[in-house]
Every structure is written in C-alpha cells, then in structure tokens.
Length: 196
Image (tube, rainbow, N blue to C red; front, side):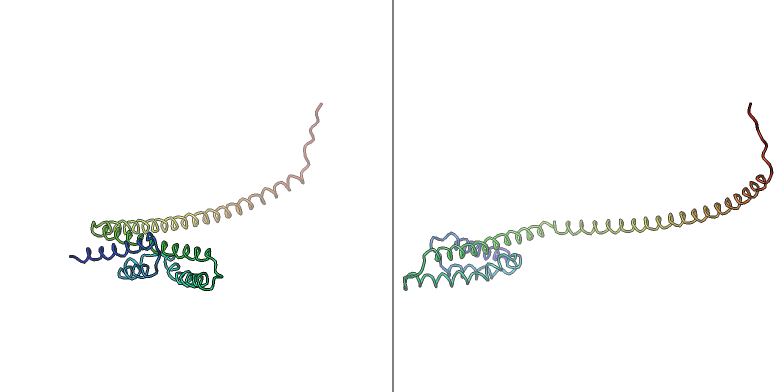
C-alpha cells in the first residue's frame, strides 16, 4: 500500500465519521470526538480549512455544556424547558455541519492540487505566471520610454515657448519703431478731404 492510498484511506475514514455524526439518528459527543481525532490525522487537509470551522470548533463546548445543564434541570429538578434543549441540539448540529463541510471541501481542494501536480499543470501555471510577469515588466519599460518621450516633448515645448518669447520681444521692438513713425505722422497735418 503506497503513502497516497494510505492518506486517502485516512481522509475517507475521517470524512465518513464526520458525516455519520451529522446523519446519525441519535447525537452523541463521542462520535464527534472520534471524527475530530480522525480528521486531525490529516494535517494538510486541516490547514486548508477556513475560519468558520475554527470558530465552530471553539464554539462547540457552549451548546454541549448548556445541553447537559438544561437536561438536568428538565429531568431532575423539573423546572427546565425542553425548548432550550432543542435549540442547544440545533446549535450543536450546525457547528458539526460547519466543521464537517469545511473538512470535506478542504479534502476536495487537497485532492485537486495533488492531481494537478501529478498532471504537471502546476508547472504550466507557474510558467504562465512568469510569462505574465515578464510582459508586465516589458510594459513598465514601455511606460518608462513613454515618460522619456513625454519629457522630451516637454523640453521641446519649453524651447518653443522661449523662441516665441524672443520673437514677441522683437515684434514689440518693431512696434516701438512703428509707434515712433506714427507719432511723427501725427505731427504732420492730415490732408483734408471734402466730399461733395
């Protein structure tokens, strides 16, 4: 028996035990404890479980303790309410379902990754990511080139503005000469034109 088959056997045993805890007609804590111990034999699967399973695991003692308390109050002292017992069983069942479903989904995720590794698709995905990185680096280099081009254009615009200022100064000097000529002409009398 190989190591992979052994791991699959442990996964199957833990999965079936946790599902049996959910679908068993009478709920007992020791069946859940057995299922959790079998699940702990698969640490790579446990690592893939998300936060709701962790929250449900640490919340399990609350309905268990309240169930025992209300059960005693109802049967021994006679002043308990069976509705409280029902809701504690309901909360217990929900927490068990959350833990079990998270374990099953993380088992499926682990199996999927294992199969992808066997096929070699992980290497293909890594190569694809490397190609995307190279393309993004090329685009960044292209952006740098665009920035350099934009800086060159900005310099050209500045040079053009400076040349334009120089030509306007020359034009203003020409206008000053024109103003002097106009002032001389103003000193001369204007010819009188009479229309008949």
